[in-house]
Length: 470
Picture 1 (tube, rainbow, N blue to C red):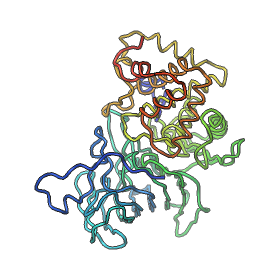
Picture 2 (spheres, one colour; picture 1 turned 30 degrees about the horizontal axis):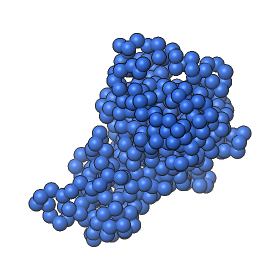
Picture 3 (cartoon, helix red, strand yellow; picture 1 turned 90 degrees about the horizontal axis):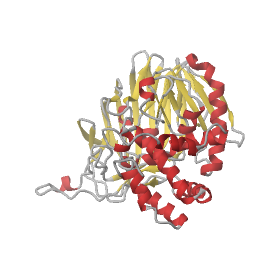
Picture 4 (tube, rainbow, N blue to C red; picture 1 turned 180 degrees about the horizontal axis):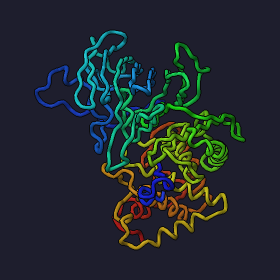
Protein backbone atom coordinates (compact mmCIF):
# COMPACT_ATOMS: atom_id res chain seq x y z
CA UNK A 1 0.00 0.00 0.00
CA UNK A 2 1.28 3.43 -0.86
CA UNK A 3 -0.22 6.83 -0.10
CA UNK A 4 -0.36 9.14 -3.13
CA UNK A 5 2.19 11.88 -2.54
CA UNK A 6 1.23 13.94 -5.56
CA UNK A 7 -2.56 13.93 -5.38
CA UNK A 8 -3.11 14.21 -1.64
CA UNK A 9 -0.63 16.56 -0.06
CA UNK A 10 -1.68 15.99 3.52
CA UNK A 11 -1.33 12.23 3.19
CA UNK A 12 1.94 12.71 1.37
CA UNK A 13 3.58 14.00 4.51
CA UNK A 14 2.65 10.83 6.38
CA UNK A 15 4.73 8.46 4.28
CA UNK A 16 8.18 8.91 2.70
CA UNK A 17 7.02 6.52 1.25
CA UNK A 18 -0.21 -23.05 -2.02
CA UNK A 19 -2.50 -22.17 0.88
CA UNK A 20 -1.02 -22.36 4.36
CA UNK A 21 -2.68 -23.11 7.67
CA UNK A 22 -2.30 -20.72 10.60
CA UNK A 23 0.30 -21.85 13.10
CA UNK A 24 -1.66 -20.99 16.22
CA UNK A 25 -3.13 -23.77 18.35
CA UNK A 26 -6.94 -23.77 18.64
CA UNK A 27 -8.35 -22.06 21.70
CA UNK A 28 -9.28 -24.67 24.35
CA UNK A 29 -13.03 -24.98 24.97
CA UNK A 30 -14.51 -23.20 27.94
CA UNK A 31 -16.00 -25.21 30.79
CA UNK A 32 -19.61 -26.11 30.16
CA UNK A 33 -19.43 -25.97 26.37
CA UNK A 34 -21.48 -28.55 24.50
CA UNK A 35 -19.79 -31.12 22.27
CA UNK A 36 -20.92 -29.13 19.22
CA UNK A 37 -19.44 -25.93 20.66
CA UNK A 38 -16.14 -27.71 21.23
CA UNK A 39 -16.12 -28.66 17.55
CA UNK A 40 -16.87 -25.14 16.33
CA UNK A 41 -14.21 -23.35 14.35
CA UNK A 42 -12.88 -20.24 16.08
CA UNK A 43 -14.31 -16.87 14.94
CA UNK A 44 -10.76 -15.50 14.51
CA UNK A 45 -7.61 -16.89 12.94
CA UNK A 46 -5.46 -16.08 15.97
CA UNK A 47 -4.03 -12.63 15.18
CA UNK A 48 -4.09 -10.89 18.57
CA UNK A 49 -4.14 -7.44 16.93
CA UNK A 50 -7.17 -8.30 14.78
CA UNK A 51 -8.90 -10.98 16.86
CA UNK A 52 -12.06 -11.20 14.71
CA UNK A 53 -10.28 -11.29 11.35
CA UNK A 54 -10.09 -14.63 9.61
CA UNK A 55 -11.42 -17.82 11.12
CA UNK A 56 -10.14 -21.01 12.69
CA UNK A 57 -10.75 -24.67 11.96
CA UNK A 58 -10.11 -24.79 8.22
CA UNK A 59 -7.67 -23.86 5.48
CA UNK A 60 -8.91 -22.46 2.15
CA UNK A 61 -7.28 -23.69 -1.06
CA UNK A 62 -9.46 -21.98 -3.68
CA UNK A 63 -12.15 -19.32 -4.16
CA UNK A 64 -14.53 -19.34 -7.10
CA UNK A 65 -16.20 -15.92 -7.19
CA UNK A 66 -19.22 -15.29 -9.42
CA UNK A 67 -20.26 -11.66 -9.29
CA UNK A 68 -22.95 -9.72 -11.19
CA UNK A 69 -22.75 -5.98 -10.55
CA UNK A 70 -24.83 -3.10 -11.89
CA UNK A 71 -23.24 0.35 -11.34
CA UNK A 72 -26.53 2.22 -11.87
CA UNK A 73 -28.21 0.49 -8.93
CA UNK A 74 -25.03 -0.47 -7.04
CA UNK A 75 -26.47 -3.94 -6.57
CA UNK A 76 -24.20 -6.94 -6.35
CA UNK A 77 -25.40 -10.51 -6.75
CA UNK A 78 -22.80 -13.09 -5.87
CA UNK A 79 -22.12 -16.78 -5.48
CA UNK A 80 -18.85 -17.70 -3.77
CA UNK A 81 -17.73 -21.31 -3.70
CA UNK A 82 -14.87 -22.05 -1.33
CA UNK A 83 -12.74 -25.20 -1.43
CA UNK A 84 -11.12 -25.90 1.93
CA UNK A 85 -9.80 -28.56 4.27
CA UNK A 86 -10.74 -28.90 7.92
CA UNK A 87 -7.93 -28.57 10.46
CA UNK A 88 -10.16 -30.01 13.19
CA UNK A 89 -13.53 -31.72 13.39
CA UNK A 90 -16.11 -29.04 12.58
CA UNK A 91 -19.71 -28.90 13.73
CA UNK A 92 -19.75 -25.27 12.58
CA UNK A 93 -17.36 -22.68 11.17
CA UNK A 94 -17.31 -18.98 10.40
CA UNK A 95 -16.80 -16.91 7.27
CA UNK A 96 -16.07 -13.18 7.20
CA UNK A 97 -18.80 -11.17 5.47
CA UNK A 98 -20.25 -7.75 6.15
CA UNK A 99 -23.35 -5.91 4.95
CA UNK A 100 -24.63 -8.19 2.21
CA UNK A 101 -27.74 -10.38 2.54
CA UNK A 102 -27.14 -14.13 2.49
CA UNK A 103 -29.78 -16.08 0.57
CA UNK A 104 -28.54 -19.62 1.09
CA UNK A 105 -25.52 -21.67 2.11
CA UNK A 106 -24.58 -25.20 1.09
CA UNK A 107 -21.76 -27.40 2.40
CA UNK A 108 -20.71 -30.24 0.10
CA UNK A 109 -23.82 -29.41 -1.95
CA UNK A 110 -26.17 -30.05 0.99
CA UNK A 111 -28.19 -27.16 2.49
CA UNK A 112 -26.65 -25.74 5.66
CA UNK A 113 -28.08 -23.49 8.33
CA UNK A 114 -26.44 -20.17 9.09
CA UNK A 115 -26.60 -17.16 11.38
CA UNK A 116 -25.18 -13.64 11.18
CA UNK A 117 -23.59 -11.54 13.91
CA UNK A 118 -21.60 -8.46 12.94
CA UNK A 119 -19.02 -9.47 10.34
CA UNK A 120 -19.32 -13.18 11.16
CA UNK A 121 -21.34 -15.64 9.08
CA UNK A 122 -21.61 -18.85 11.11
CA UNK A 123 -22.30 -21.95 9.03
CA UNK A 124 -23.64 -25.23 10.46
CA UNK A 125 -23.40 -28.08 7.95
CA UNK A 126 -25.99 -30.84 7.99
CA UNK A 127 -23.24 -33.28 8.93
CA UNK A 128 -20.08 -32.49 10.89
CA UNK A 129 -16.90 -32.24 8.84
CA UNK A 130 -14.15 -34.65 9.88
CA UNK A 131 -10.68 -33.43 10.82
CA UNK A 132 -8.49 -33.11 7.68
CA UNK A 133 -11.47 -33.69 5.37
CA UNK A 134 -11.80 -31.58 2.23
CA UNK A 135 -15.09 -29.74 1.83
CA UNK A 136 -16.80 -27.03 -0.20
CA UNK A 137 -19.07 -24.24 0.98
CA UNK A 138 -21.22 -22.25 -1.43
CA UNK A 139 -22.73 -18.93 -0.35
CA UNK A 140 -25.36 -17.10 -2.41
CA UNK A 141 -25.78 -13.46 -1.48
CA UNK A 142 -26.98 -10.08 -2.69
CA UNK A 143 -27.17 -6.43 -1.69
CA UNK A 144 -25.53 -3.03 -1.89
CA UNK A 145 -21.83 -3.32 -0.98
CA UNK A 146 -20.61 -0.81 1.56
CA UNK A 147 -16.88 -0.14 1.85
CA UNK A 148 -15.03 -0.32 5.13
CA UNK A 149 -14.00 2.88 6.83
CA UNK A 150 -11.17 3.17 9.31
CA UNK A 151 -9.92 6.72 9.69
CA UNK A 152 -7.14 5.61 12.02
CA UNK A 153 -5.59 3.72 9.13
CA UNK A 154 -6.45 4.25 5.47
CA UNK A 155 -9.93 5.71 5.53
CA UNK A 156 -12.19 4.07 2.93
CA UNK A 157 -11.29 0.69 1.45
CA UNK A 158 -12.85 -2.56 0.23
CA UNK A 159 -15.49 -2.60 -2.50
CA UNK A 160 -16.10 1.08 -3.28
CA UNK A 161 -18.90 1.84 -5.78
CA UNK A 162 -18.06 4.48 -8.40
CA UNK A 163 -20.30 6.11 -11.03
CA UNK A 164 -19.13 3.72 -13.75
CA UNK A 165 -18.21 0.65 -11.67
CA UNK A 166 -16.19 -0.04 -8.55
CA UNK A 167 -12.75 0.63 -7.10
CA UNK A 168 -11.69 -2.49 -5.17
CA UNK A 169 -8.73 -2.22 -2.80
CA UNK A 170 -9.13 -4.29 0.36
CA UNK A 171 -6.07 -3.94 2.60
CA UNK A 172 -6.12 -4.83 5.44
CA UNK A 173 -9.49 -6.60 5.83
CA UNK A 174 -11.90 -5.26 3.22
CA UNK A 175 -12.50 -8.33 1.06
CA UNK A 176 -15.41 -9.24 3.35
CA UNK A 177 -17.24 -6.21 1.90
CA UNK A 178 -17.80 -8.11 -1.37
CA UNK A 179 -17.30 -11.84 -0.82
CA UNK A 180 -17.35 -14.28 2.10
CA UNK A 181 -14.06 -15.89 3.05
CA UNK A 182 -11.23 -16.32 5.49
CA UNK A 183 -10.21 -12.67 5.42
CA UNK A 184 -6.68 -12.70 6.82
CA UNK A 185 -3.31 -12.98 5.03
CA UNK A 186 -2.43 -16.13 7.02
CA UNK A 187 -4.71 -18.14 4.71
CA UNK A 188 -3.79 -17.79 1.04
CA UNK A 189 -5.63 -19.43 -1.85
CA UNK A 190 -5.97 -19.45 -5.61
CA UNK A 191 -8.87 -17.60 -7.25
CA UNK A 192 -11.26 -17.79 -10.20
CA UNK A 193 -13.42 -14.76 -11.04
CA UNK A 194 -16.54 -14.68 -13.22
CA UNK A 195 -17.69 -11.07 -13.34
CA UNK A 196 -20.78 -9.86 -15.22
CA UNK A 197 -21.31 -6.14 -15.84
CA UNK A 198 -23.35 -3.99 -18.24
CA UNK A 199 -21.98 -4.04 -21.80
CA UNK A 200 -19.38 -1.30 -22.22
CA UNK A 201 -18.02 -1.75 -18.69
CA UNK A 202 -14.66 -3.51 -18.24
CA UNK A 203 -14.02 -5.92 -15.37
CA UNK A 204 -10.40 -6.27 -14.21
CA UNK A 205 -9.34 -8.94 -11.74
CA UNK A 206 -6.15 -10.68 -10.67
CA UNK A 207 -4.18 -12.99 -12.92
CA UNK A 208 -5.10 -13.52 -16.53
CA UNK A 209 -8.30 -13.86 -18.55
CA UNK A 210 -9.18 -17.47 -19.34
CA UNK A 211 -10.98 -16.50 -22.55
CA UNK A 212 -12.45 -13.58 -24.39
CA UNK A 213 -15.33 -11.66 -22.74
CA UNK A 214 -18.79 -12.76 -23.84
CA UNK A 215 -21.76 -10.42 -24.30
CA UNK A 216 -25.43 -11.37 -24.20
CA UNK A 217 -28.60 -9.51 -23.31
CA UNK A 218 -26.78 -6.24 -22.76
CA UNK A 219 -24.32 -7.73 -20.29
CA UNK A 220 -20.68 -8.78 -20.64
CA UNK A 221 -19.01 -11.53 -18.64
CA UNK A 222 -15.27 -11.58 -17.93
CA UNK A 223 -13.39 -14.59 -16.58
CA UNK A 224 -10.08 -14.21 -14.78
CA UNK A 225 -7.86 -16.71 -12.95
CA UNK A 226 -5.07 -16.18 -10.42
CA UNK A 227 -3.41 -19.58 -10.17
CA UNK A 228 -0.81 -18.52 -7.62
CA UNK A 229 -1.71 -18.34 -3.91
CA UNK A 230 -3.03 -14.92 -2.90
CA UNK A 231 -4.09 -13.22 0.31
CA UNK A 232 -7.72 -12.13 0.29
CA UNK A 233 -6.86 -8.44 0.71
CA UNK A 234 -5.09 -8.53 -2.67
CA UNK A 235 -8.14 -9.77 -4.59
CA UNK A 236 -9.76 -7.19 -6.84
CA UNK A 237 -12.70 -6.80 -9.20
CA UNK A 238 -12.15 -3.23 -10.33
CA UNK A 239 -14.91 -2.21 -12.74
CA UNK A 240 -15.45 0.75 -15.04
CA UNK A 241 -14.63 2.28 -18.38
CA UNK A 242 -10.94 1.81 -19.15
CA UNK A 243 -8.49 2.28 -21.99
CA UNK A 244 -6.21 -0.75 -22.19
CA UNK A 245 -2.72 -1.45 -23.46
CA UNK A 246 -1.52 -5.04 -23.57
CA UNK A 247 1.71 -6.72 -24.56
CA UNK A 248 4.78 -8.13 -22.86
CA UNK A 249 7.81 -6.81 -21.02
CA UNK A 250 11.22 -7.06 -22.67
CA UNK A 251 11.75 -10.27 -20.69
CA UNK A 252 8.50 -11.75 -22.00
CA UNK A 253 6.14 -11.29 -19.02
CA UNK A 254 2.57 -10.46 -20.12
CA UNK A 255 1.85 -6.82 -19.28
CA UNK A 256 -1.57 -5.15 -19.03
CA UNK A 257 -2.06 -1.46 -18.23
CA UNK A 258 -5.50 0.11 -17.81
CA UNK A 259 -6.49 3.74 -17.27
CA UNK A 260 -9.79 5.48 -16.76
CA UNK A 261 -10.42 7.89 -19.69
CA UNK A 262 -9.73 10.79 -17.32
CA UNK A 263 -6.17 9.45 -16.99
CA UNK A 264 -5.67 8.24 -20.56
CA UNK A 265 -2.48 10.31 -20.84
CA UNK A 266 -0.88 8.09 -18.20
CA UNK A 267 -1.57 4.81 -20.00
CA UNK A 268 1.62 4.58 -22.04
CA UNK A 269 3.92 5.58 -19.19
CA UNK A 270 2.18 3.13 -16.82
CA UNK A 271 2.60 0.32 -19.35
CA UNK A 272 6.22 1.12 -20.15
CA UNK A 273 7.38 1.72 -16.59
CA UNK A 274 5.55 -1.32 -15.25
CA UNK A 275 7.37 -3.47 -17.77
CA UNK A 276 10.79 -1.94 -17.17
CA UNK A 277 10.50 -2.05 -13.40
CA UNK A 278 9.16 -5.60 -13.28
CA UNK A 279 12.08 -6.82 -15.38
CA UNK A 280 14.62 -4.93 -13.29
CA UNK A 281 13.26 -6.19 -9.97
CA UNK A 282 13.59 -9.73 -11.33
CA UNK A 283 17.36 -9.15 -11.56
CA UNK A 284 17.52 -7.78 -8.00
CA UNK A 285 14.94 -9.84 -6.10
CA UNK A 286 14.87 -13.04 -8.13
CA UNK A 287 12.43 -14.35 -10.78
CA UNK A 288 9.09 -12.60 -11.05
CA UNK A 289 6.68 -14.75 -9.00
CA UNK A 290 3.53 -14.37 -11.11
CA UNK A 291 2.33 -14.84 -14.68
CA UNK A 292 1.58 -11.22 -15.60
CA UNK A 293 2.26 -7.66 -14.51
CA UNK A 294 0.85 -4.19 -15.12
CA UNK A 295 -1.34 -1.69 -13.31
CA UNK A 296 -4.68 0.10 -13.20
CA UNK A 297 -5.39 3.84 -12.80
CA UNK A 298 -8.98 4.50 -11.77
CA UNK A 299 -10.68 7.85 -11.29
CA UNK A 300 -11.68 7.24 -7.67
CA UNK A 301 -9.63 9.63 -5.51
CA UNK A 302 -8.53 7.13 -2.89
CA UNK A 303 -5.35 8.98 -1.98
CA UNK A 304 -3.39 5.72 -2.06
CA UNK A 305 -2.24 2.87 -4.25
CA UNK A 306 -2.53 -0.84 -3.48
CA UNK A 307 -0.38 -3.70 -4.72
CA UNK A 308 -3.27 -5.94 -5.86
CA UNK A 309 -1.61 -9.14 -7.05
CA UNK A 310 -0.50 -8.77 -10.71
CA UNK A 311 -2.45 -5.48 -11.04
CA UNK A 312 -1.43 -2.64 -8.68
CA UNK A 313 -4.25 -0.13 -8.37
CA UNK A 314 -3.67 3.64 -8.35
CA UNK A 315 -6.54 5.65 -6.93
CA UNK A 316 -7.25 8.89 -8.75
CA UNK A 317 -3.76 10.04 -9.72
CA UNK A 318 -1.10 9.46 -12.34
CA UNK A 319 1.59 7.37 -10.65
CA UNK A 320 5.22 8.36 -11.03
CA UNK A 321 7.99 5.80 -11.35
CA UNK A 322 8.75 5.86 -7.62
CA UNK A 323 5.24 4.73 -6.70
CA UNK A 324 5.18 2.15 -9.49
CA UNK A 325 8.53 0.81 -8.25
CA UNK A 326 7.07 0.56 -4.74
CA UNK A 327 3.90 -1.29 -5.75
CA UNK A 328 5.69 -3.70 -8.08
CA UNK A 329 8.28 -4.53 -5.40
CA UNK A 330 5.31 -5.69 -3.33
CA UNK A 331 4.72 -8.48 -5.85
CA UNK A 332 7.72 -10.11 -4.16
CA UNK A 333 7.44 -8.56 -0.68
CA UNK A 334 3.87 -8.91 0.53
CA UNK A 335 2.28 -10.85 -2.33
CA UNK A 336 4.58 -13.82 -2.93
CA UNK A 337 6.10 -13.57 0.55
CA UNK A 338 3.13 -12.84 2.79
CA UNK A 339 3.15 -11.89 6.45
CA UNK A 340 1.42 -14.30 8.82
CA UNK A 341 0.53 -11.53 11.30
CA UNK A 342 -0.04 -7.82 10.67
CA UNK A 343 2.55 -6.89 13.31
CA UNK A 344 5.25 -7.78 10.74
CA UNK A 345 3.97 -5.28 8.15
CA UNK A 346 7.44 -3.71 7.83
CA UNK A 347 8.41 -6.84 5.85
CA UNK A 348 6.02 -5.53 3.18
CA UNK A 349 6.29 -1.76 3.44
CA UNK A 350 9.89 -1.39 4.57
CA UNK A 351 11.07 -3.56 1.68
CA UNK A 352 8.91 -1.74 -0.88
CA UNK A 353 10.14 1.62 0.42
CA UNK A 354 13.75 0.48 0.17
CA UNK A 355 12.98 -0.66 -3.37
CA UNK A 356 12.19 2.99 -4.20
CA UNK A 357 15.69 3.92 -3.09
CA UNK A 358 17.19 1.07 -5.11
CA UNK A 359 15.27 2.22 -8.19
CA UNK A 360 16.64 5.76 -7.81
CA UNK A 361 20.12 4.26 -7.38
CA UNK A 362 19.62 2.18 -10.54
CA UNK A 363 18.49 5.27 -12.47
CA UNK A 364 21.46 7.26 -11.20
CA UNK A 365 19.36 10.00 -9.64
CA UNK A 366 20.19 9.38 -5.96
CA UNK A 367 21.97 6.75 -3.91
CA UNK A 368 20.29 4.81 -1.14
CA UNK A 369 23.08 6.00 1.13
CA UNK A 370 22.19 9.64 0.47
CA UNK A 371 18.53 8.99 1.23
CA UNK A 372 19.46 7.11 4.40
CA UNK A 373 21.72 9.94 5.62
CA UNK A 374 19.03 12.56 5.01
CA UNK A 375 16.52 10.59 7.03
CA UNK A 376 19.05 9.80 9.74
CA UNK A 377 19.63 13.52 10.21
CA UNK A 378 16.12 13.98 11.55
CA UNK A 379 16.24 15.06 15.21
CA UNK A 380 15.66 12.57 17.99
CA UNK A 381 12.32 14.27 18.68
CA UNK A 382 10.94 13.30 15.25
CA UNK A 383 7.83 11.12 15.77
CA UNK A 384 9.29 8.47 13.48
CA UNK A 385 11.80 7.44 16.15
CA UNK A 386 9.06 6.87 18.74
CA UNK A 387 7.31 4.22 16.63
CA UNK A 388 9.26 0.91 16.47
CA UNK A 389 8.36 -0.46 13.01
CA UNK A 390 9.02 -4.09 13.91
CA UNK A 391 5.77 -4.14 15.85
CA UNK A 392 3.12 -2.45 13.70
CA UNK A 393 0.27 -1.08 15.79
CA UNK A 394 -3.25 -2.21 14.86
CA UNK A 395 -4.67 1.31 15.22
CA UNK A 396 -1.84 2.84 13.16
CA UNK A 397 -0.66 0.11 10.77
CA UNK A 398 0.45 2.41 7.99
CA UNK A 399 2.52 4.78 10.10
CA UNK A 400 5.42 6.58 8.39
CA UNK A 401 7.87 4.62 10.52
CA UNK A 402 6.73 1.24 9.15
CA UNK A 403 7.70 2.49 5.70
CA UNK A 404 10.64 4.81 6.24
CA UNK A 405 12.31 3.38 9.31
CA UNK A 406 11.58 -0.06 7.90
CA UNK A 407 13.50 0.87 4.77
CA UNK A 408 16.29 2.36 6.86
CA UNK A 409 16.60 -0.95 8.69
CA UNK A 410 17.46 -2.62 5.41
CA UNK A 411 20.06 -0.01 4.56
CA UNK A 412 21.62 -0.31 8.02
CA UNK A 413 21.79 -4.06 7.38
CA UNK A 414 23.35 -3.48 3.96
CA UNK A 415 26.01 -1.32 5.59
CA UNK A 416 26.71 -3.98 8.21
CA UNK A 417 27.01 -7.03 5.95
CA UNK A 418 28.16 -5.49 2.64
CA UNK A 419 26.59 -5.42 -0.80
CA UNK A 420 27.52 -8.96 -1.96
CA UNK A 421 25.89 -10.62 1.04
CA UNK A 422 22.98 -8.16 1.18
CA UNK A 423 21.86 -8.72 -2.40
CA UNK A 424 22.40 -12.46 -2.08
CA UNK A 425 20.17 -12.26 0.99
CA UNK A 426 17.33 -10.58 -0.94
CA UNK A 427 17.27 -13.33 -3.55
CA UNK A 428 17.61 -16.10 -0.97
CA UNK A 429 14.74 -14.60 1.05
CA UNK A 430 12.36 -14.53 -1.91
CA UNK A 431 13.43 -17.98 -3.14
CA UNK A 432 13.16 -19.78 0.21
CA UNK A 433 9.68 -18.43 0.97
CA UNK A 434 8.17 -18.13 -2.52
CA UNK A 435 4.35 -18.20 -2.29
CA UNK A 436 4.56 -18.77 1.47
CA UNK A 437 4.43 -16.88 4.76
CA UNK A 438 7.20 -14.99 6.53
CA UNK A 439 8.05 -13.49 9.90
CA UNK A 440 10.62 -11.01 11.13
CA UNK A 441 12.37 -13.78 13.08
CA UNK A 442 12.86 -15.76 9.88
CA UNK A 443 14.43 -12.78 8.11
CA UNK A 444 16.80 -12.07 10.98
CA UNK A 445 17.85 -15.73 11.11
CA UNK A 446 18.57 -15.81 7.37
CA UNK A 447 20.55 -12.56 7.51
CA UNK A 448 22.68 -13.95 10.35
CA UNK A 449 23.19 -17.28 8.60
CA UNK A 450 24.34 -15.73 5.33
CA UNK A 451 26.48 -13.03 6.92
CA UNK A 452 27.93 -15.13 9.72
CA UNK A 453 27.28 -12.21 12.07
CA UNK A 454 25.21 -11.71 15.19
CA UNK A 455 22.78 -8.98 14.14
CA UNK A 456 20.53 -8.92 17.19
CA UNK A 457 21.67 -5.45 18.29
CA UNK A 458 21.17 -3.95 14.83
CA UNK A 459 17.64 -5.28 14.40
CA UNK A 460 16.69 -4.45 17.97
CA UNK A 461 17.80 -0.83 17.60
CA UNK A 462 16.14 -0.26 14.24
CA UNK A 463 12.96 -2.29 14.63
CA UNK A 464 12.03 -2.52 18.28
CA UNK A 465 13.35 0.48 20.25
CA UNK A 466 11.19 3.64 20.57
CA UNK A 467 14.16 5.92 20.02
CA UNK A 468 16.56 7.02 17.34
CA UNK A 469 19.29 4.41 16.77
CA UNK A 470 22.78 5.65 17.52
